[in-house]
Image 1 (cartoon, rainbow, N blue to C red):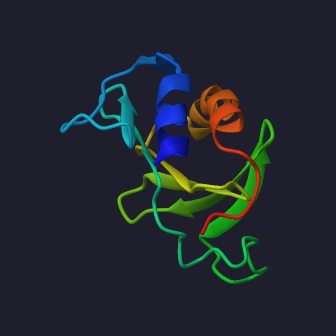
Image 2 (cartoon, helix red, strand yellow; image 1 turned 180 degrees about the vertical axis):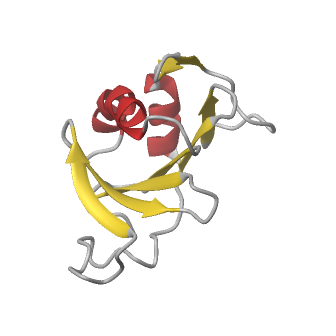
Length: 125
């Protein structure tokens, strides 16, 4: 997917102060930072909790929509205490998983410029 390759090229070398350490196997669709890693996956399917692409009010108390530096995200708390964020209103869905105990806002702030540069606003198929 062209948009994901563009995103991979635009990603920062550090996220939330953590060095980039991509997961195996190497792919332009995935990236990682730190240990335990913040993981980014590009080109994921639309999350079931996302509706056209807005979040229905009251749809799920653990799913919250919000924007960080011009990028809208769906936030979902995972059973293990991690948080998963998926872009909304972009031509490709990008998912970022932040491990339990790590500051999510720092990761999203650091990733926002790359997402804005590489993934145009719009509706993903």
